[in-house]
Image (cartoon, rainbow, N blue to C red; front, side, top):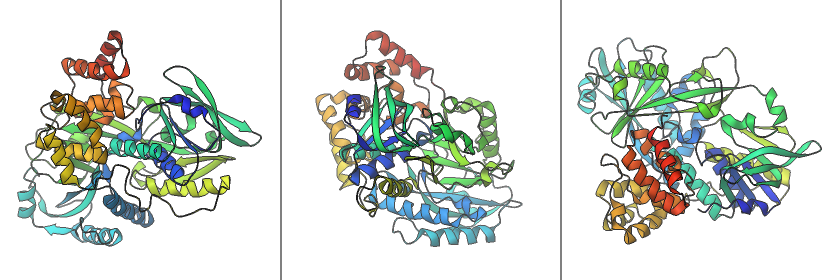
Length: 525
C-alpha cells in the first residue's frame, strides 16, 4: 500500500468515493472489482472515524429483536456467516454470557424465545452453535466475577469479534489490488457541478497543499458523520439525521475468555463487557451528539455511566476512574426521528441522491457494510450505464488477505522470532500480508520483540505500517495499525523509539519525530 496523490490526476474516473471508513472502503473495492475506474479519497487516515471506534463486533444485533427489526437482524446475521467464512483471520467467534437477575427487564422466557429466533435467523454454521441455558451455579463457575445476589441463571450464545480498523485497512488494500486509486489525507474540499448534477470534486492533499479537480461519472459520499461537511454538499442541509455517540472504556481483565451482555439498571440499555488483548472493553453509550465530529471524546459522564452500570453486576472488581486504562468514542449516523430514545432509532442503512450523480450513504453497521456497498454499486452502475448490473463480486470472494492456513502463518511468525501469542495475533492482523512483516524481521531480529510486554504487538509492526500500510503519523500506527494507544498510556521512551522507526521510513527530521512522539504521549480518546 503506497500513497501517491498524483495518481488522482489520472482521470476521468467512473466512480469517486469520498470517505475511507468501512463503507467507503467496501464501495471502492466493489467498484474496482466490477471494472469501474475508481478513486477513493479520505481526509484523514483509513478508519480514523467511526470505523475504528466500534465495539469490535460482527453481529446481528440481538437487542434489535426487541424492536422487531427482523430484516436488519437477518441481513446482519447472513453477513456475519459470510464474513466468518471469507475471512477467518479477520472475524472469529466469541461466546457471550447473558445473566438473568430477579427483577430484570427481560425474563427467561422472553430471552429464550429471542435467542431461539436469533439462532434460526443466523442459519447453520459449524463455528457458531445454538444458545444454551445455564443454572446459577454453572454461570458463576464460568464467570465468578458476576454478583450472585438475585442471580438465578443465564444464557450463552455466540457472535463474532473483529479488529475494525484492520478490517477497513484490508478492504482498502483489496481496492488497490483491484486497480483503484486510494489516497488518505486527501480531502474533498469542493464538489464540482455541471448543471443539476455533480461531476466530481476538488481533492486537496493535506500533506502538501496541492489539489486536483477530479472528474467522475458518479460520486459517492461515504463520509459518515462528516457527510454534511463534504465540500459544497448543498441540499444535504435539508436532510434530517442524528449523530449518536458511543463511548468505550478499557479496564483491567476479568477471569475467563467470555464476553458478557448486560442491561444497565439506570436506563435499560444493553452494554457489553468484552475481553480484548488481555483487558476488558466496556461499551457502549448511546447519547445524542452536537458539535464537530472531529472532536468527539469520552467525557466524565460517559465514564460514570459505564462504570456504575458495570459495578451493579460485578462482585469485587472495584473498578473506578483511576483504573481506566484507555478510552475511545465514535459517532453513529441515524435517520432523524425526533422524540425517540436513541436506542429506539433504527440502525437501517439508506442510500440517498441529494443531487444528480451524487449518492450519499447514511447509517448502517460494520457488519452489513459489504452488502450495502454492493447495493450502492448497483445504483451507481445504473447511472453510469457501463454494462448491466451483475451479482456482487464480493459475495463469495475471500477477503484480500485471506490465509490458506492460519496454523502455517503462526508457525512462520514463531520461526521469525515472535513469541507464541504475538504470532497468533499477527496471523489475525495480517493474514496473507504477514510476509511483509516477516521480511522485515529477517533483517532485524530485534524488531520481533514486543513494544509493550503486556500486549502482543512487536516493534516491526511500526516499520511495516510506515513502509507497507500507508500510515502517515505515529497516531495512525499506534491507534489503528495496532491498537496500543487505546489499551493504555504510551510512555515517552516507547513513543520516541516508535517515532524513530517510523521516521526512518517517512523521512521525519528530529523535530518532527519529537512532535509525533509527544502527540501520542498526550493522546486521550
